[in-house]
Length: 123
View (tube, rainbow, N blue to C red):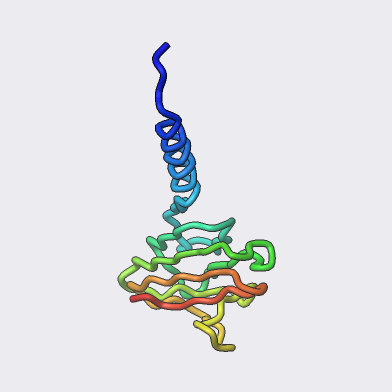
């Protein structure tokens, strides 16, 4: 059996750990519609709203159970703003203003910090 310098094995171990970390960082993605019913977000990830509704709410999960996790919302509906449920409603940036809807054609990102969803529009 050939002998390899220990440095190669250490480099390989580092690389394998890094690949595992990158794989864990990948956000799950969901295409959703609220045209016929409200939709409850189940966890971290990227949620693309393909068909939005001004009456069927998008419901955020309890931020106290998801500290440090993020949710991205993309409202790709070209005609309708998406209503947001008052339950666990996200706060706009660092303010005390809660968002009640997501404008059409916009992109939002939120992070759970101190039992509140904080974030806002990115486009």
